[in-house]
Length: 562
Ligand code: GLC
Ligand code: CA
Image (cartoon, rainbow, N blue to C red):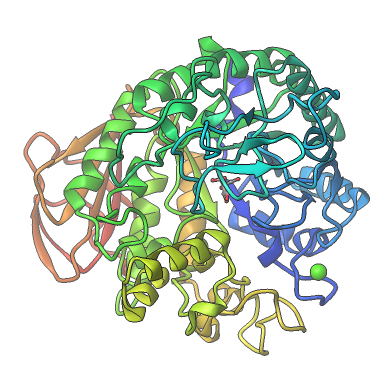
C-alpha cells in the first residue's frame, strides 16, 4: 500500500456517542449541531478522525443499532444538511468523519422486515433468516441472543421463526441473498458519495451464517452460544472482499470492523492489505481478562500478567495487518475504573493507561470523556439503567437468585451506561453545559470535579496529557512503524515495552502499582542516550537511570536516536 493511502495508520480516532456529547437545542439529547460547536475542542486535542455512533433513523431499542431506514437521519440528532455541514467543517479542520454502520441486522421497523414478515413470496421474504419450528413447535435451535432469551422469535404470518442475535427488534439480515448484498453496497456508496470518510462496521464478523444452523454445545463464559454458527462463518471473507471490491476500493476510506469472537489468525485474514478486506479490526481479548463465572457482568479484577500476554500477542501477531487500539467505547465501562484507580490516583492512572495504549503499534481510539479521565457512574437504583444489555442482565441475575447488592455492584462495574452519560463541558449548572434540560440519561455526580472547563484550565490535567501523547504520536515515526518488544515479561507491577525502527527507539514504562516500587532497567534495555519525552508526574531527571523508584501508576516514555 502506498504511503499516501495510509492516513488511517497515522490517525488518532475520537469516538463520539452523539446522544451524549453536546445538546445544541436543549431537548436533552446530544446532536450534530452540538458536535459542530465542539469541533474546535477536538482539533485542539489533536485528533484527526471522528467516529460517530449510528445516526440513522431508528426506534432506538438499542440506541441506533436498530436502523429502520439507512437513507434517513435520526431527526433527534439532526438533518442531512446538518450532517453535510459537520462533514464540511470537520474537513476544513483536517478532521475526517467515519460512520458506524450495522449491516448484520436492521430494526424490525425497517420496510424490508415489515415486507419480509408478511409472506413467503415477496421481494424481501429472503432478506432475513427464517426457519421452520421443530416438530414440537419449538425454536429451530438452542441459540441464546446477546441480550437474553432465545435468538429466535416466532412469527405467525409465516409460521416461522426469524433469527436475531441481539434484541428481537433487531432481526439478522440474510447475507446469502445477493439482492440484499447489492442493496447494502448501494447504500454504502450513497454515504461515501455524501462525503464521509469510512465506516466502523458493527459486528461484521457475524454476517455469514453456517447454513446447517447447528445447536451449540455448552459454552464457556467468554462466548455467546450462537457464535458456533455465526461468527467468522464460511463465507465471511468472500462477503467482505466483495464489499471491498464493489465499495471500499472505489474510495479513499478507513474501514474498521468490529469483530467479536475473532482470533489473531482471523484478524490477520481480515486486515492484511493484500487480501483487500478491512484496514483494522476491534478484537476483544483484552476486554475478556476480567470476565468471571458469569461472563462480562462479574466483579473480577484483571491480572496484569493477562493484560501483558494479550496485548503482546496482538502487537506481535498482527505484523502483516494492523491493530485498532482501545481501552473503552460505548459498550464498555470507563477505563480508569476498570484498569486503573479511579480514587486516589485517578489522574495518574488515567494518564498511565493513555501512555500504555497510545505508544503501541496501531491506530488509537479515544472514547469521549476518556481524555478527561471520566469514571464509572453510580446509578443509585437499578431502574435508572437504560441500556438494553444491562436490563437483560439484571433480569437474568435476579432470576438466578443473586442478591440486589451483587447485581448493583456488577452493573456499576460493567454496564454500558457507564460510558453513555453526558459529557460535562462546564463546571457549573445542573447538567454541566451539556444541556439546559434534564438529559435523556442520568448525569454523573463527578461532573463537579471532572469536566472540560476545569481540565482546560489545568495544564496538569488528563486532557493536556492526552494532547501530549497525540503530539508525540504525530512527531515520531517510531510510534507508527516501530517493532514492538515486551520487556521484563514476568514483572508483576510494571508493563514495559520497546518500540524500535532502524533509526529510533522508544522505551515505555508503566507501573500498575498503587505504591512506590523499585524498578531496575535490564542490561539489554539500558542505553545512555535515552531521554525522557513524557511522564505523568512532575519532571524527573531527563536521563534514563538503571535503578529507579516508580511512583504509584507512574508512566515514562524515553526516546533515543540510534
Ligand atoms: C455492537 C455495538 C453495540 C450493539 C451491538 C448490536 O456490539 O457496538 O452497541 O448493541 O453491536 O448492534
Ligand atoms: Ca438536541
